[in-house]
Image 1 (cartoon, rainbow, N blue to C red):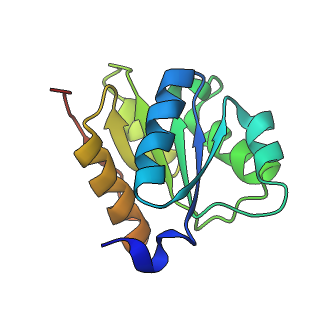
Image 2 (image 1 turned 120 degrees about the vertical axis):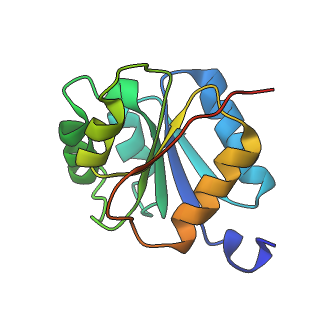
Image 3 (image 1 turned 60 degrees about the horizontal axis):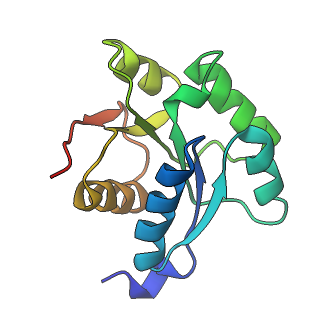
Length: 143
């Protein structure tokens, strides 16, 4: 299903919780994707010294100065192209988090904890299609 293009796909996962990074990497490796892990923007920039990612998955809580500022800094510090999709993960319950993630340039927003099949579907959907006009939020509960 993913064999034809998966080996060429590089995903940068940024989260300050090692267990989330491990889970994301485990799922992506199972799909055949390369997963670079970082706990913050400076580590992310180091990870991307030679190759840009095809997708960024980032925890919203890392955006301490706002999601737009985080995305701008991510694009600057990692020399990230503007068309690279950013998928946000978060356990935040803030009512306006989806609006802020969309305004910041997010493609998808997935609430943690997430179901692996839903995560996989969003990653695949993000890779197949250009950035939607508006962010798509997905609520899940793990079983």
